[in-house]
Each structure stands twice: as structure tokens, then as C-alpha cells.
Image (cartoon, rainbow, N blue to C red; front, side):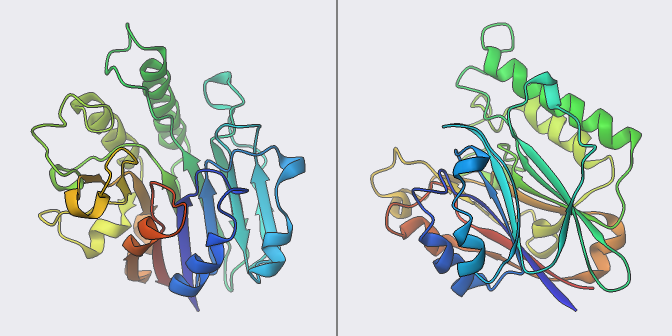
Length: 266
């Protein structure tokens, strides 16, 4: 069967819930993973699942900040044993087992801390938290190597030279600093393959985020690739297509991130 998984930092699911229909029309996903839903579980707009033809819903949210959710056409089982990263209970990770013919697939939906503005752990608690978060998830997956799994989300790091508009100018900017790139690489090396770069050479510019600060984001085109899809090596032969929905940055009241999808033949 063909399985399309989309990921999107929606930056408030209640504010932008109507845009999910645009995402569905453009990408026809079987599963949608959302980050920065910014809503406690009891206030999550559950009707969205039915409207989108995705009756299976898992969410982990809190008021005003963070929050992740998975909407699916296929049955989901919550993975109950995921760690409380950095003991903060800040709703940055949701994992589920997706029912598929043959064997289930494990799906991880992550929202990595942004890290603030100063790339120095001694001066910036948010940056220290980001590095600690990355270290914890890396140690976890090193201890429990993934298999038949997909990891998606806003990982808040643009790791490659052409994942940013200017490698040289952003080397000391949070999201592209060498220490963050090394941390993300160490995490990826626990058993993951960059599914989008499987299709797009590393020599090609590729972005998923454009700042709200740019009055004309399309003209300036100063983007970063902060949103990722990773798969375990056993799923690489199943990769069939990817899509970065750049048009989503021009939707009414858009998120500063755009949806990203990957399709597998399973």
C-alpha cells in the first residue's frame, strides 16, 4: 500500500485549523503530524479529525506553548513508554504504532526546543535545554535502536550547508551552529536516514521555514530547512516521493513553516 505522512508546525491549531483542508487537498496524506498546536488536550478541536476523514487522533498538548498531535486514516496505538524529556513534561514528543498490513509502523512526532537567540549554554537557558534535549533523545535511540520507524517534526535545526540561505552568515545563529548540527547528526546516526535528502541532493537549496520578519518572504527567500522526515534504513527501499508545500507559506494567516510529506510503498 501507499502511505503518505505529512508533518507541519501549524503554530496554533485553533488559529489555523481551516488550513488543514488546504494541506489535505495538496498532499492527500494518510497521516498528519502537527507541532506547536498550543492547546491543552481538552480544548483540542477534535472535530477536525472527522472533517478531514482521519478518525484516529492522538494529541499531547498544553496551554499556549508546544504541543504535538497525530491525525490518521489508519488506526493508531499510543506508545505509552516514551520518556519525559529533560523532566519538563512540555509536550514535545508523541509516538504511535500505525496499523498496517504485515506489521505495524512506529511513528515519532517531535518538536525540538528552538533554543532562543544566544548560542551559548552558559548565557542562555533555552539553548542549554535544546542541547540537553538532543543529548537525551540521542542516548535513548542509541540504547533502543529503531526499526520500521518514521520520525518527523520541527527539529529546529538546519543541518546542511544548503539547508540555509547563507551558510557563512548563519554559522553563529541558533539553528545552524556547529554544536547543534553535530548534535542532530549524532541523533540521526542512532539509526535514521534523511528521507527528504534521499530525493534532493545536498548540493541543492531546500527550505521549509521563512521568518515572519521578512516583509516579502518569497522575494528575500531567506529560508531554513527546520522540518524533517527520517526513516529507518529498512524503509529506505520503500521511499517513493516527497513534497515541500512552499505554497503554504502564502496561505491566509500562514505559519512560518510549510508542510512536508513523504510517501512510502509498504
